[in-house]
Length: 385
Image 1 (cartoon, rainbow, N blue to C red):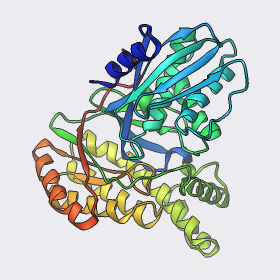
Image 2: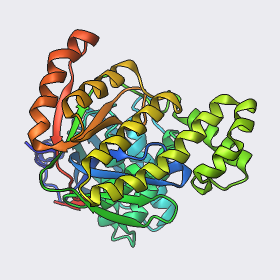
Image 3: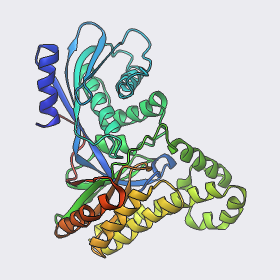
Image 4: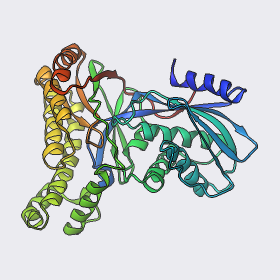
């Protein structure tokens, strides 16, 4: 069953009435442009055909009663009292945070609701299960209250919930692509202006995702540290964000910064070069130049490994295996915040089985872990079902 069907069915069982509204928001995979979003730079993700459904109906109690199907847990909170985190249920922070900031943006929103959440985005895999939940809840509230919020507004409310309520200082990419994704296209996003440009995926190209099953936790991990280092580097160069720094400008003072703080210099080098790689990758894909795209993805991975230092040995090994199978006909790299999660590969469909086989034959032997392998489609963003 789809997440939408599961959510509707469970809503009927748990609340003994039919759902009035079902919303679905996809997860995402980022093809290139990692950690550039909170540096106001460029990213190129796509929404994927895995996501989160929220099915529910209004109630007249002024409360939200929420059932998370995948975790078999309830949460309940009032709209007439300050909305605060529930430390016993981490997932509930994404729901409570969105509702809290929906109320701040639209104080007239006081409509209680009963809802069921169901999703099939792998958790802690770097595929934005949290953003898909935030965007789905935001769209549900927008429809429930008849609120004048655009999909971009909903995405930014989701980001705010994650930053200020959950405590992860993520950028805006994950929520934006979940809200604005386009069928059969990557979306190049300028994370400062919020302008987007669709980049069609050639019909013979597959988007492969391999889950390493090394779990990550960006709140407890070093994500927030990386953001602080980037902000320090921007201050050193006297720019608003590292997006404003060209590669040439960085090189002119790289040694000076490195002498002060070697790690901060390395973080800045990744961001500055990664921004350029996104622009170059969009151009390469537009020309159907998979060899060049593969080179850029390889450079991106090396930069994440050596300069941003967010990969782990299992992820590096998966990329190595995938690239062996692909040769010059595509590219592979880590995707997501880092410290585990997934790799992504783009290549002709004719290469899918070769990639699947080399990983199946070697990954478990080397690491003791068993991968999950997905062939995804670039999908539409948030929608009413």
